Image (spheres, rainbow, N blue to C red):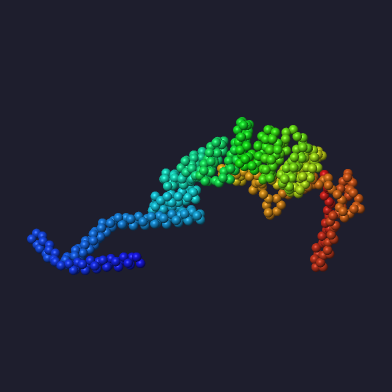
Length: 506
């Protein structure tokens, strides 16, 4: 609407100007080199306008002819760029569905038509990775690392290739360089943090963690937990070297992460040595309610130095009562009961878990049989059963099982990765029973529990020293062969011999 109004205004102004020129009296005289031209003002104005229009047209034609080569070059460049972009798009799609041949072809096309495009370098690197060409991938990532716009991406690719080649030194150097370029890079900070933990540089690890919290990579709750993990690891390392630093570190760690099991155990130990029994018990109880653990039960049992085995048993029973039905509580009670020679209480604690025992349950039952009755046969049977029993929980991180807690996963370098749980490889299958007892184990475990069947109470008991083979009993009666058919002259088959029962197990 505004354009229409402006157009009408311009037309009106032009008409007014033309009318004004037409109304002006007089002539226009042009004289030059002896020549003289006389015309009216309207004719002169019209001629001047025609000359201006012709000049503009001629200038436009000359200017267009002058720019033709540049336009040809620009069009050719745009077509090459379009082909390169199309090749990049198709190559990335080929990488997405795993077609290495098509990805390599599109990468070559993109390199010819759009060699300077950052996506071309990325396509070349990923196609080389898909083909297993590590040298080609490293060349592409080095080229990316030399550019300002793709430097961080190139360093990331070189870091991954160094990890695949098991070159830890190069991986850490690349991560440190990336951390200088971008302090808020998550993968670089995680890699450098894991390296600091591996070499025991706890001050450097804490500094990186503070930088992560400042950069917004982690929230406050995660920061408190991870700082507690690093402080607990430092406290464990300096437990026998610098006890003051260890005590200071674990005190701060238990405030930041009260459910961290290693920190709770070590803090309870220091509080117990300082005769702060109630405080030590409170620390262990808080961690136990979050995740029962045998180290917590042991620390709770020995929280007061000089107590007898029965006093420790009572204390462990109090702790186990806070999580009823948990197997760790039953195992802790059984361990304390065996130390206190309360074998009946130990059996009672393990009874709910005997049907499908874990390795620790089976080993405790073997210890009970050996210590209480001196029955080496039944103890050996329980020991053999422990070999094929269900696995107990362990410190596990990314499929790696460790005999002790660690602050960082050795597989991925992830902080606070270890969890107290049953390893994935040890989980039972849904297709059938995971553990089967051998006949020898069943015979040994049931050898002192043989009773007569209730259906035949009048049957006389067997003599203990009489061999079973002296009085064979036919279990399967001989079956008489059927008479042969009239048209068959085959002689009748002989009756099967009676089968003797197997002798009882020793």
